[in-house]
Amino acid sequence: MRNIKLIIEYDGSGFNGWQAQERTRAQGHKGTSKRLKTVQGEIEKAAKKLFGKYISLIGSSRTDAGVHAKAQAANFRIDSNFPLNKIKNGLNSFLTRRISIISAEEVSLRFHSRFDSKGKLYKYTILNRRTRSPLLEKYAVFVPYDLDIIAMKKAAGYLIGKKDFKSFQTSDKKEKDSVRVIKKIEIISRPPVVEICIQANGFLYNMARAIAGTLIEVGRGRFKPEKVKEILKEKHRPSAGQTAPAKGLCLEEVFY
Image (tube, rainbow, N blue to C red):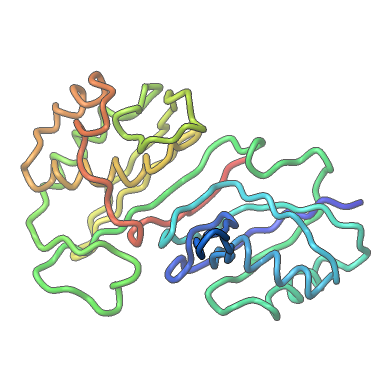
């Protein structure tokens, strides 16, 4: 038995997120289920064509519908002697062009892409100008208002460190502990593009997008930078800014 670790790049547009799932439709007294199109599901289908058997793919992060990834990590176990290069190229040959296996390596059987992760880096991209961009439509959120970058950086400073981020968590019964450690937040302005880079030991459901939405509110002058301290203290999701659209978010790196 071998344990194969993949690094995957994908355009999240048109996918119902990373995690394989089923949609149930009621028909009279009976229900039918149809599998939604997800990144995990597409790779598992490609693997079945390559190996002739089903594999269970474990992802490091359950990215939402519309979220992209530059370096999603995942692993699966397989009883096969295929060389690594054949695994990478073989999977790519069966995959849509919106998904690419960047690398494949054999790791310890104990390795688990999610539980062994020490942290992740997400980048949120904003198009900050008066007119929209057809080229960035799928990869950046359009904000036509002036943004105060200095105020956004000040607000971001209050988020760094070990804190309870319950105010930045969309309800998720699976995540009972809302304490996380943000190691750094960088706000990079390259007009007309503004990037918010967030590195943390882990992220709650929609946490990165909620932080981005809150910092955008600060940049627009709707929140004072100091309000972030109040938001953290209140531990109440409505206290923070709106959840920013998924298309602006990209998983940049997973740390082990």
